Length: 80
Image (cartoon, rainbow, N blue to C red; front, side, top):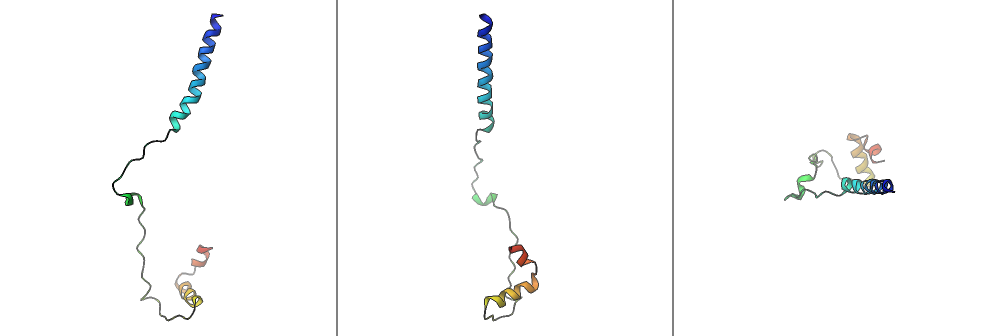
């Protein structure tokens, strides 16, 4: 009868370990606070102004698209 008590205690400890170890591993960590919220935003390339590259005026949107595709032929595939 004494051996059964130790088996129950060992089973209880294993059960607690199975429950508590994943909880301890997956518990959310506190995020590091920063004073500047833009510190984690990635840097983007500087936009090129196209006003001096494209001659207008354009009468329709299709003409603008055609002018864009002259320099950026792969842009249509990238959008799709």
